Image 1 (cartoon, one colour):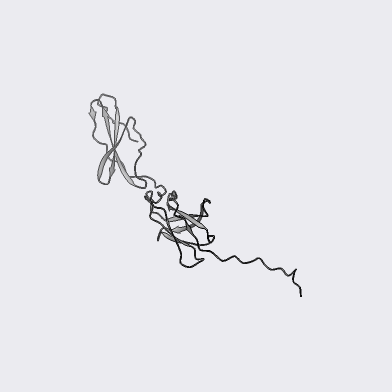
Image 2: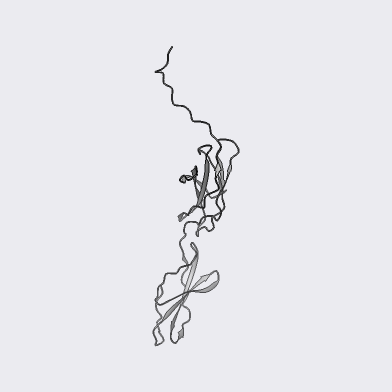
Length: 192
């Protein structure tokens, strides 16, 4: 928002031209009829300054003084362009290794971690299984049901929250596992 000019030049103001400082260059960003506007298309998590010109049928004014620096809020990161990659972790029962690329955009704030979600079996729902640090962008996923196809996807997290999940990985069959322990034995049926 800005204050209207003190002197209108004897004619009504018909437009306000808003310029945005990007780097060290000023660019005309919008033309509006009022002294306030909602600007779209600015980068999340960035800093900007603004200046305004008034226009009437007599011409365009000089620029206002630049505004104080304004900061656009960060948003959650965008998903990666590439789905994560799965591989078997080497030894049976050690799970799968999931590796992924950085998100396409960080939403204006550093990516601080990732959320991994996997599905067991074709067509089954994805379940969030682990939250990991931002680096090294890989994780060992263990505790999966053995001898089933698994697909995983990943979402970045920054100060603004969790972003959208990537496309799912290709399916990979996890190594077969050993059975769980049997139930506790009972002595009721013991014959001596």
